[in-house]
Image 1 (cartoon, rainbow, N blue to C red):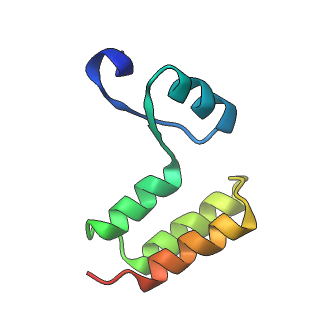
Image 2: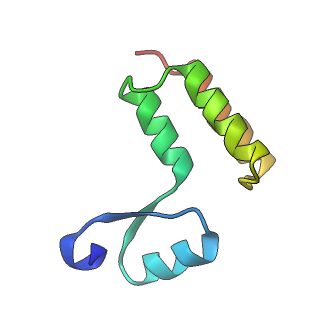
Length: 79
């Protein structure tokens, strides 16, 4: 359905993303959604940091260097 309609698929699991992309689907992850919320003014930097911290404490797996990069982008973003 996503391919037929040209929609983006929200998916964090890396092997699923690999398969989706091999099928020609555009993928985005949860962190993309959080960052988009900050960029669009829907989330404050504090809300984004709290959301990400909650995700990580609930078992969301992320490489430490990527977590650092995302948190830095949240902190540095100015409207």
